[in-house]
Structure formats: C-alpha cells, structure tokens
Length: 270
Image (cartoon, rainbow, N blue to C red):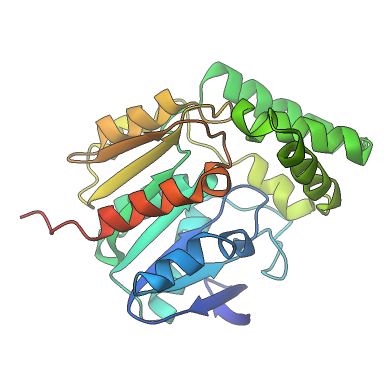
C-alpha cells in the first residue's frame, strides 16, 4: 500500500508483480483490495504487473466529500498512469470503473493499450436511474438499515440466483456483507456519477481495442446495456458470462480471468 499525489489529491494504490502493466478500476463504493482475491493472482501469474487503487471517495484515498465528477475520476486514473510511468497500459474497470475506463479511452487513448469493461453501460435505463436515486435518498435520510437486512438486499441486488440457491454460499456472502463498513461521504458522491441519458454515440469515437464483459443475471447493469457499449465501440468484442450477477468477477472469477487474459493476448489489430 502506498500513497501518491495525483491530480491534486492523495491516491492509495498497490503494485503487484512484474511485466506489462494492467490498471484496475473498481466500482461505486468499492476499494481496490476487491481485486486481490482473484484477479491480481491470475494476472500476475499470467505475467502482468497489476496496479490496483482506491478511487477518490474511498479512504485512504482522499474522500473529496465536497464533490467531484467523472472528469475528476478520469483525470485521477490518467494521472496515476502517468505518475507511475505505465502508459500505455491495459485498463480494466467494473461498473463505475468501466464508465471511467470508457471515458479515459475516449479522452486519453495515448494512455490505454487495451480496455476491459465489465458490468458497464453507456446510458442509464429507467430502473437503473430509479435504483440509484432511491439509494441516494436512503443515504441522505440518515436512516441506518439493520445490518442483516442490508446484507440480504445487497446479496439480492449483486449476486446471481445460481449463487444464492446454495445455502452454504448464501450464508458466507451474507456474513461477509454484514461485516462490510457502511458507506461514507465519498461513496455518496460516487452514487451520483453515471452516464447521461445516452453516451453511446460518443463511444463510437473510441479507438482503443476494447472487450466488454457482461453478466447474465446482473440487475444493476443488465447485460443488454453492456452489449450496447460493445456495439458502439468500433471493433469491440463481447462476452456474456452465465450464472453471475453484478459481482460476477467474484462469483465466477475463472471465467472472467480467462476472458481478460485471452483478450490481452490477442494479436494487435492493424
């Protein structure tokens, strides 16, 4: 763990392995440590140097509770790549991290060699907007849900029914979610960051080789929204992984890691 000054804030990051760099960007409320369990070991074993970090809003990176935008988060990622001398780097993002990676590919293609976009979208559908608004209103109300209830809701929102139908797995996930620390003010700012009504037209200008991974049982960012991103980005490829929800990179890491490594090893397109 190390802190580095980037884009006017302190960013907490970790540097694993050696080889060509892969920068991994987490989603709303998540810390970079979430990649440690499955993705970091798989990518370092495949010969890559993996950099994970906590987005602004997630301590020990500066929380920036006064507010920030997607442009700030893109600039943070670009600044980290430049400060560590990583560019052009492969970039992996999930959920909000996928949105950041898409915008980084558009704004700074010189820094991105390839992009993997997981559980992502180029627009917000009606249910997605309703859910985001409801969660923000719940946070702003100051109401604290009983931890067990909050854990059940989180499991149903983020995991596949295939995972939850196994009692032992369901209990393990519920215990984990119950222990998770409550979201802080930086996460509240992240809740408001989402694509506008439609960003897909802009993504037609992305030139970075891109691969979209969607999860078939994802109710937060349904797979059809990931397909739209893949269809918008010229030459992008697409995988839909069955039996996974929004946390598919944790539910079926073998499939996710295989898709990433195979994409990274594809010959460069001319």
